[in-house]
Amino acid sequence: MINEDVYPLDFYTQYSQFYLTDGADEDSGGVLWTDTAFYQRMASDKGFLAVGTECYGPVKGRLEIKNDGSNIGNLDEYDHVVEGKIDIETGVLQVQDCPTSSVVLEVELPSGLYSVRVYSKGLTTVEGDEGDDFYRIVIWPAMNNDRKVNVLKQYTP
Image (cartoon, rainbow, N blue to C red; front, side, top):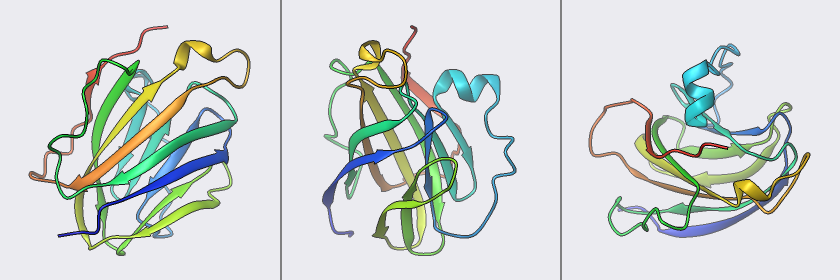
């Protein structure tokens, strides 16, 4: 069992993305953003997830740590929902900005593979660099090791 908790997110990032990492000093190599990953709004590598945002700069949202993936909400109120996996080998999950990879939030978690679901809403409110977009990130221990990124609800601008 892990300690369930909710952490507010309010930070500045660039290039319409931010990162979830296991805190290791590993470089993603910059090749994560394929056309498919861009469309899915999530790029993944071992110990690393890049989350695509609609805004260029200010990100508002929350990170929720759960014991399992049940009862984590329906998709109706969100514009886009995508799910992936991340290996947490260091015992630490970090939320980092782009491009400096400054740590915005750090949470201790038992080492292991985790499912990560990102709910995005308010995407149509973004004009220029900012809007009222909001990102709910839910993470829980993975039940299988299928590392494929799955879009549960696709946003099409």
